[in-house]
Image (cartoon, rainbow, N blue to C red; front, side, top):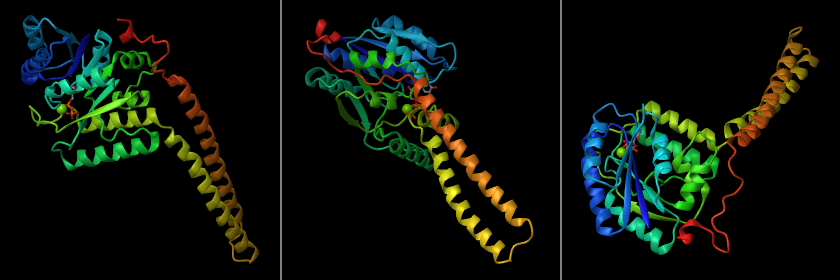
Length: 313
Ligand code: UDP
Ligand code: MG
């Protein structure tokens, strides 16, 4: 049995060493075979030099370096692709995901056969109100529009080999690790933790990059914005109808200025036709979007007689 620990790292020079020490200590105590894969996501500090140094001390460590900053999602995928384990654990490099939880995560996977073990934050760490409100809005919008509840989810996760293979086989390019692992399904267990204070001050994510991430994640999981156009169309039509009747009433009761009625009616008719047409195009666009994402129609978790990789060994 092999466990792969995957650590995306971007400008984590200060914490990498102690992160590695603590993680290795925990894994050693478990007496299992393990590998650790750190993806340096194009750090601009000396993270890479440190990584090169510590690969000499830890034979189980593989370090991958990106040519530039490609983002955490890409760093996770690079790690998962490289991983050979029967299970992989994705963990932050800044020690906000306590390595001591690895023990419990591995136990739940090994002994209780959960295919995904999620780290769940018991409280959000100290953050500015802007980030807090932003996060809350995003999570509630995401949960309501996509039907996938990721409100308590984090990227701190253990995935069984079956899940890793399914995740890597997904053809879509715009990835959202938390959303997609939830979408894949599979039996899940949770372990709870209070995120430790950051080693360095501040998150690596700027407000701008968080907003971009939120927008992309939402759009790849829901057609809601496109559907909204149809509803706007309906409301405009109802509004136009009422206004149209009122305009005609004014005309026939002789209270309308010459020509005014025609202008208003044409405006209203065109307005609703345009809105409806956009809505219609939106519906097709939504379908096309579903198709190009090429998400599988279902995900199989087991076949009888057993054929899963874990059992072959
Ligand atoms: N990270 C990364 N690429 C980035 C930004 C962050 O690989 O472009 C890594 C970072 O080094 C850390 C993890 O992703 O290991 C989480 O980042 P951070 O702690 O800044 O985010 P937060 O704690 O707010 O989730
Ligand atoms: Mg962090």
